[in-house]
Structure formats: C-alpha cells, structure tokens
Length: 149
Image 1 (cartoon, rainbow, N blue to C red):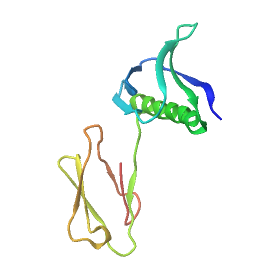
Image 2 (cartoon, rainbow, N blue to C red; image 1 turned 90 degrees about the horizontal axis):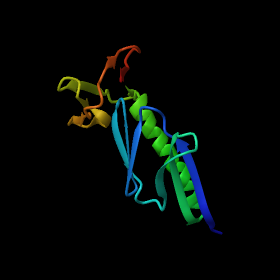
Image 3 (cartoon, one colour; image 1 turned 60 degrees about the vertical axis):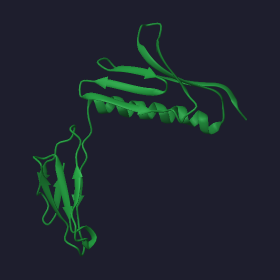
Image 4 (cartoon, rainbow, N blue to C red; image 1 turned 180 degrees about the vertical axis):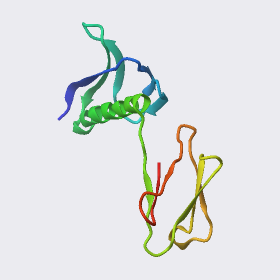
C-alpha cells in the first residue's frame, strides 16, 4: 500500500544556515561546514518558513511505500546530526587494548597523524592521517592502556 503524501518538518536553530541543492544538504554553523548527499533517496527537500517566521526544513515523499516513508525520519536524523556537528561538535575516543600482540601507536606530524604498529602481529605499521578538523590528545589514565582523543 502506498501513501499519497508523507511529510515531516524540523526547526532550524539560530546561527545555522542550511542550503538545499539537488538533494545535497549543506549545513554551516559556528564550528564549520558539513554536507550530505541524499540522491539515493526518493525524497523532496524544501526550506520553508512557518506562520511565526521560524525557518524549517520540510521533507516530502509522494506515493511512497513503508520503506520510503521511514526514510523521511532517517534523513531528518542525519540532518540533525549535521546540525549537532556544526554547533556542538563530537568527541571520539579510541582505546588500544591488547591480549597477545602488544599494540603500539606513535603520533607523528604534529598531532595530525597516528601510526599503529604491531596490530594483530603485522610487521608494517599502518599510518592514519586525520582531517584538519581533528586534534589528537594522548591520555595515560589506565595502566597498560592509552586513550586517544
């Protein structure tokens, strides 16, 4: 069974600008700019203003099945995560724990790259380069473990 029209809206907070162009959503805020491509979803995105003048993002789908209707809420959650990323930001914690092979990690290139050595007994180190948005902090809080922020 198909639903003729399904739609949901979300408020856009102050200090955040959203641009919609051909199912590509760009969110810009105080901490930077993020974008997400929704071209694989059969959804319509519109920027609207309600009666009180608040800016809103409206997502519609026409003649959608249950999966397409569920994709509306998924897309709204993704846009909310983009807004959180440009306003508050996220913190990722990575902990190296080992049972048999001792894992070593070395920070290189002035906290913009990390090299993981002896992961699962491999001889060659694996370099990981961080984006310019990230910074790397080492914490030795727990014995034998290192916590990377």
